[in-house]
Length: 567
Image (tube, rainbow, N blue to C red; front, top):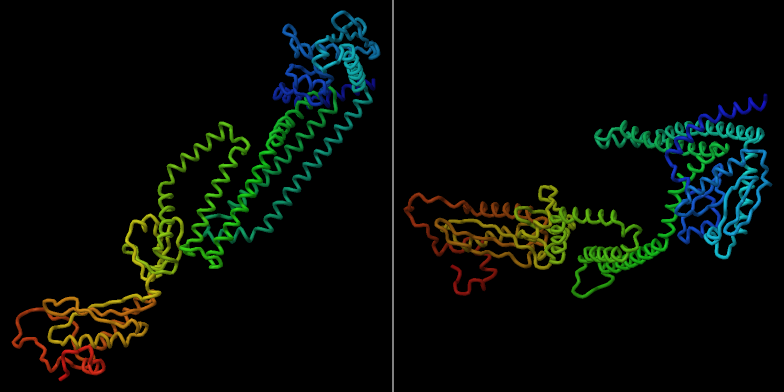
């Protein structure tokens, strides 16, 4: 009676496990052919290219057998396993009843009146060179006897009770692990919210609510729960595998589950192991490229600082030249490393490479144009950072010269971003390059009537230049008479300064000084419009040629009027 109750309990406990076993059996039936734990002889047979199939009892591989055309290896293995199970189920046949029977062409393993299997010379040759069929039959006989004893021992009441107890313990451990996982999920979320709550709120305010804190927390919770879910699935998978292995009826499914997990991992490990030499070569290439790149960085940094001087090489060229050298080093290293990249010979890798190349070629025309223009401008020495330049109608101080664009700060403190390709095709006026040595020439034009002596006008203009602060005294200012117009003489005042960034302020100060000086000496700058001929001709009498301040200037520098005497 106790035996029947125990058997019923075992049957009820295994119902759920058998359902899982059926699902796993459908998912991976082909993996049963690759059972783990095969002996070395079968490995030798596999290396010889001889197809073999495993003989398995309760998920344990005893040995592997070959087949022939009329009796394939899988069918032969299944038939042998079926006979072994039938013998093990019949407790009237002891395991010691197994014995070999010799014939002319094979050795039979017999139990009572039933032949379990036959071992031929071809089987022995397939297993190992020099192995006889008699020796191989003895090896198989021991394995079959051990499997029969184990088959019967695992189905006793005591062993089934222990298996039930182990399954119950693992079930309790599963519940405990899932409970701890739930607690870990709550603790992790609480810690994350406590630590990063202020940072998330600050990010929301800094982005003007473009990034909402609620969205961030939804994403964080999803990631944490996904990680916990994967961990829970892994724990449950391990639980099912362990519990199924506790019972002989479900152990084959447990082996299939193990193969389902280990087969991809072993394949991946094999690929990684095969790629280790290539990875070491890639590591050496990366280290060598970084070493050469660091040497180049040190060299060009020293050139930029002036520690190392290279003839006909501007220090401003150091950074762009280093960028070019770095690109060449990376390209050369990539070219050498490409054959050693794992999977580089695969069709998928080549397809992705071609796709990226097509995208780059289609979208990089303007990019390459700006890059080439940027480097061209650098080596042309057209301007430097800090120079005041004019590009077309845009004027400003250069704040940054990039590979793609150049940044200017306009006179109104505006940020101007100009593509380098546009700068390369535009006229560039640099107000700073010669101002460092020779000074920048500022000029302004005034129109004065014919009735005002030109000597007086020039003297007043020079006096205005002298009164303007910030202008250079050497080279001295000078005046050009641009034209004799219809109603006025056009005088151009030219002065020097060494501060191009103050150009417009100096123009303002100069114009103010001109207005003040002409007002002091009662000379009108505005050219009168022509209406009719005046009654008196607008001529300057000779006695008024040297009106002040021209008289004082002529007395101080008489050599400027060598052919004329002062009145």
